[in-house]
Image (tube, rainbow, N blue to C red; front, side, top):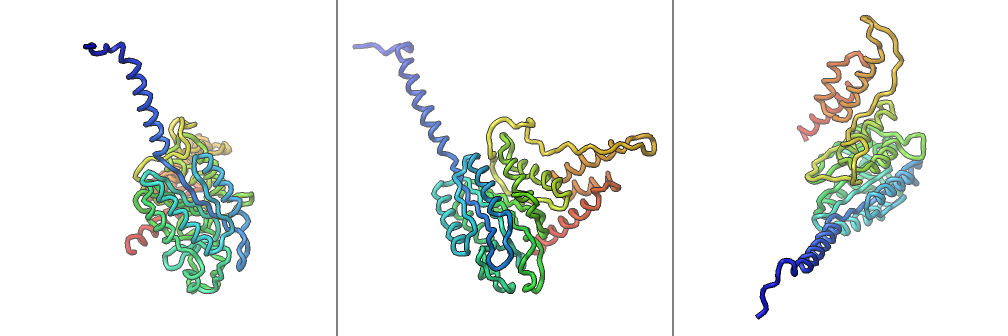
Length: 343
């Protein structure tokens, strides 16, 4: 009767088994996370003035998302019917990825709020009164419901849609920008500017918000929350504080647009302030040092974007040129908190 094989004789077999197991695990890992995106850009409005940038914004974001491993569907200058179909098809496709899927919906174009509800405006919308909005547009709530139905692990909604209301003459009460929406569990909602405020198209081929987001999504090793913090700082600087992006997040897992080592060693959202002219002041301290400290504190407060940080900035730097802007941001934030508590 042959004896039991020795360990030496079994080594080739064990090595083969190890290779097979590693291959199966690797294949499973490669399939584990499927990234899907629906990118919508509406510029060619037929009943109001066209917007210059949303189509080019959508193309720019689509390119960045493709580099980040997303399977991207692009819908440009869509009617209400086509937008609804695109959202439906995207939801069904995302559902097929199972609980490990990641979905991202990006929209650039006109957006409206009526009585606290946000609506995305197709290019063929014929809106004369507030009552027409629900009939002629697509509710953001419907988009959110479609994403929630998919049961994806993480979902993102990015809205560069906070432009001024072109239909306000037919509205009984003019409401600026979009209303704050709490992100459902496992999701993040990002706005190009603060709730109730309006965003700029910018003077270039892309809006300040989308240009910053597309660039910063390409940075490796930066957690998604830090990406949006960096976007907030970049846009605030580019618009001299007139536009402050906003996010509502209930993410329950980690996510990186690009993996790898972070260029700054950890995804820090701080930015070195611009040089300030040096002039002597009382006590001999250069004005440059005081202004630089205030600018760094301002950028830290913008990155944190919470009322405590803004209050601390005002306490530490009441005479800063940024103080008035920070007071406006703080007031808006307090009003939003009160609205959330009563709604």
